[in-house]
Image 1 (cartoon, rainbow, N blue to C red):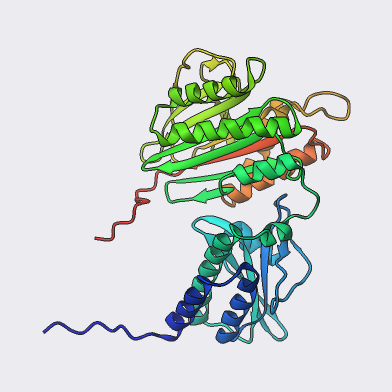
Image 2 (image 1 turned 90 degrees about the vertical axis):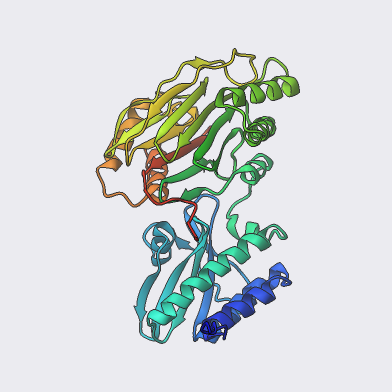
Length: 406
């Protein structure tokens, strides 16, 4: 006779199960008290939920009953920021116990940080709190679709209508898997208009698009919306990379006429082999970064921007080596005028990448954020046009992203 399976509930399962059962029918404004109540059962107190602001500079507290609402904490140089950037728990000893900062991970994208204080902490606490933080992240992402509460907490200054549209279009700003890591940054966060990016991992193929719609403000945002919508449609009907361009070109020309266009960089990356395909539609060529330095541009035969009726584009093939990074950017990075009127230029961009590449890497998410801040400082804080960065790192991990449960 086979041994009976133990189905009894332990303390941790009861706690997480209770939260999961109650979360399904909990209104968004009651998520915070529910989280605080769960932490209290473990012996925690002074619970804070810190969400990333849209400029990716601060972690701002989510207001709510039973939550400890403190001042925003900078992403750079704070315990909460270290937890956020590295996706790891940070513990800080205090006179009355230990302050813990736990990353709120939804899949591989970071939502923010949960902070709480305990008298003492052991490995059982750490394990349970880590799982609780994962559940909290899922709750926040799910409930975000039903409320403006989380958006309002993250917004630290007025946002234009065009920026609202762009942020609603964007996928998660980062994805981390054993084989590949991606991260994106969009500036100016509260006034973005025509720049956007999109990605999806379907089986072993990472699909990437980085676009820049002509014009400014709402007109550019509307054009970017159509371009990304056409790109996603093409991606989901399984057409080739060149055919994606044709889909997008038809949509833009039909909707806006012959005098409007969108530049685009389209990419397929096989995460099992490192084989990459590129289509360049009037866009700056991406940079190949190897061992922390830019080794070359990834050139491809340039076709006309999307919307101008170019011929079916030629697809350029490249092969990445393990650890290679590909940096895509829009022209707002290099065409920004410096104080004397001189454009920032590609040479300065490459110099910044090389300089930062000599420092220890903290992962694509943190490294791209550091590059974005460095470039902005080098431009004297100016961002008069949209300035977008998108980075891909190929890791050639032998671990399948489709976990074998057999």
